[in-house]
Image (cartoon, rainbow, N blue to C red):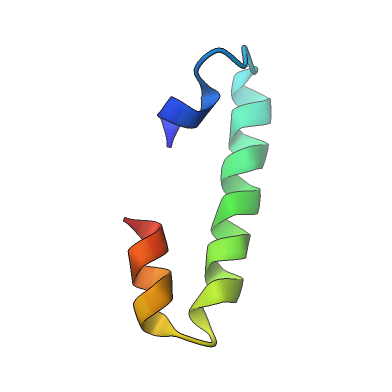
Length: 42
């Protein structure tokens, strides 16, 4: 996850916001197919 932020120079608060967004998107993806969600979370 942190590799995505390299070179972006984000504050910790901004990184946390992005993490929260990614997490909620992953949770949304879990509903249709657990296999695809598992692949995305790793």
